[in-house]
Image 1 (tube, rainbow, N blue to C red):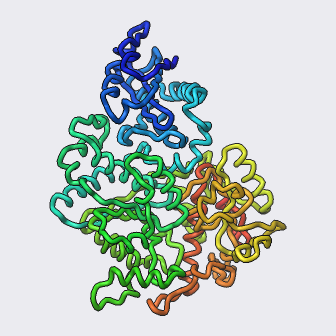
Image 2 (cartoon, rainbow, N blue to C red):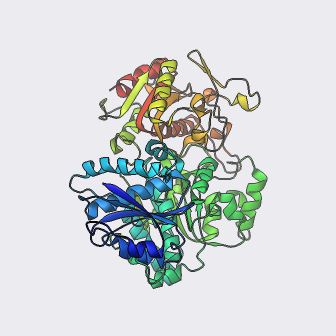
Image 3 (cartoon, rainbow, N blue to C red):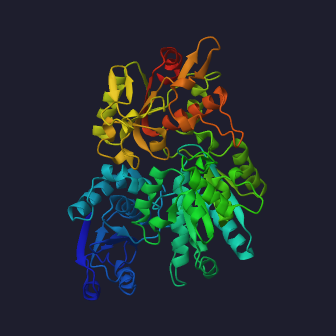
Length: 569
């Protein structure tokens, strides 16, 4: 393997020769870049393809090219290497990637493992040239990488997007409004689908009739004149209820051509918008709120009144109503078992959305587990264990590192060790301690097993903040994010009731006032059963953050003893 490095100009391309003629008739991968932008391609005719790029105003300004040549390369290897480099460039940060996302593949082929070992060597050479600023591990741990639209989709995601696009363009042609629902458990890639769709729609809208959309992509048929016209002046937005995740996605959109941070918004931004949206995608739609969910009740009133119809009680409107009334088309991504506050959308409200989508054949389910290496079975296992474990046998999940600890200091030290080795290892906890450090910064929030710990000081992008390893993340900080290893503190808000032989909730130990506050106005009360359901949802989310492993410390000794067989494979 070797990499040839040359200036990207007409004279160089015309005179470039290679001893074996592989600049004309051999599968290669190449990069084009200047100081701020990069493009990655693969071709059988490097000279011909480079000449085409010189004639393209979007790429002719680039100043240098590199061609990766290897005597054993074939088309499958080149497609894989191209995808690999695009994903890493997008996750690294310094360069804006000019590629579309439709060409990203993850296909198997003969001796793939051997070739991928060579990819790391190619990366090291390109990093030595200054094209990358971080190591592979650092890139893959970054939000830019995890939330990038440059992803290889699994079959569930790909099939859902194809069907959604077909339905969307049909609705646009007919002028018919519609709602789509994408349902999926934690780690099935709902956020990836939303971000991928945003980029794909922008690429279709910006394409030219002469553009060559990747013929290997299942999306290539959407790059046609009729669809481009339907997307002309098309106003699209991505609604993300959680502020922290919203800010992280905005950072990604700042680096992607065709996407803008202003496209990522909260529900209030939608309600305050003067003009309607042609399409709104709503990530974590189950976290949309009702009146009283937000301390800013005056703001909620203003926004609800702005969309209310004559004679309608604005207090009964939800943030979902704002979105439905401010958009012609909607794609809602949700999992009702990730509802964590009583004034999130109610079960009946979520069921209404699901029922309508099902009747209209616009409901899609993502099943493939993309986050947790333990697989989809682990998600159901966690759910059953938190319900008490009745009817299941304790089991292991292969190489997935699932452990219960009797010592919180020991668990925390292992999290530190894993962070040094792999990065992205953090301690998180249920909301079982008051956030006293907000008022008294030097006073610890959590005092357990001889340790004094602080809740997350950063409200946004906590996982990447300088002090995050020393702190404890809350549900509102980590929902929607991935970790390599999660150390989960199950607080005294959950305990094992010996009399009833079941997991129960300790209302007085649950410290999130908004997490147990109902609404007399809406007739919402939060009894112990309702609160137990919400608290268990919180721990389901926390116990499914770790991609490589999950460590658990349980404060209640009786609950720890009950869970020991299930969490100690």
